[in-house]
Length: 293
Image 1: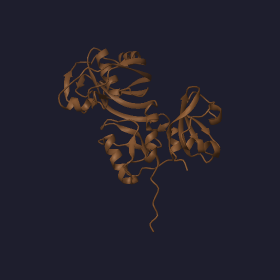
Image 2 (image 1 turned 180 degrees about the vertical axis):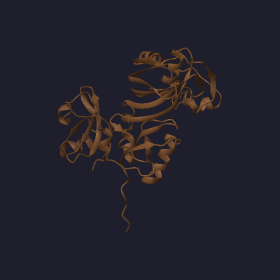
Image 3 (image 1 turned 135 degrees about the vertical axis):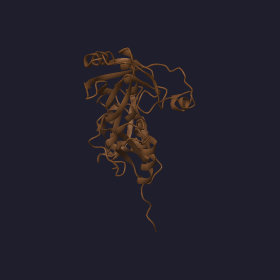
Image 4 (image 1 turned 30 degrees about the horizontal axis):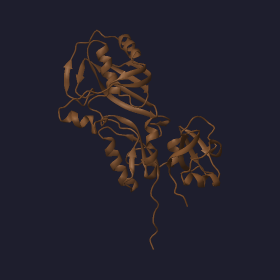
């Protein structure tokens, strides 16, 4: 009698190569892990490289928490050329003579884009408006009005390169920030135009490119690693039973006295059982990863 293999369950930190869409990476890993249940925590543009966190099996259900984590990028901004996509993959729409712009000028306008800012998502993006992704509308030659959103740029450092019109940038920002839009804004504030030449994501929260694996040799980490940036509580076997049934609990019973949630609920062995959030003075599960026995 053949033994049924348990479904793979966990997270995988991938260093996405250039030329791959985030969906391409997911499709590849579905084959490698042997399951259709694979998703990612945040899209990277095809030409961009770097950290892409995947959820596998039941751990796809925790990806929405990882999406909200801050991001860390490095890239290159080219002054004098605007494109349809705001990056090097698009068609040139305008050129500007910007030879007189100096390093200090770029740093000054980058400072204006630091802190909480209003940002309009680019047309060529995966953001959904009216049930359709913006890039789908853009491919058809359409353009629609987009509402600006509040994003936070904690760090926006600018350094020179060998090319006087190309500047290296390092950005630490909130989730939902478009680095392409920051590059275009740099050009606009300098009285011309610009686009993003390259982009590499160095980190999503504490998930760094140093620990990321090749798309050819992904490593599956336990589900608990996916919530390592969040508060954790360890519960007894008795409370673990309540958790498995998805019961609303008193904060004291769960041990949720550290912070305002969400809390990663672990058993004695450190396995991730569920994620709990505040609820009318108590706590309730938003995700339960184990089945009641």
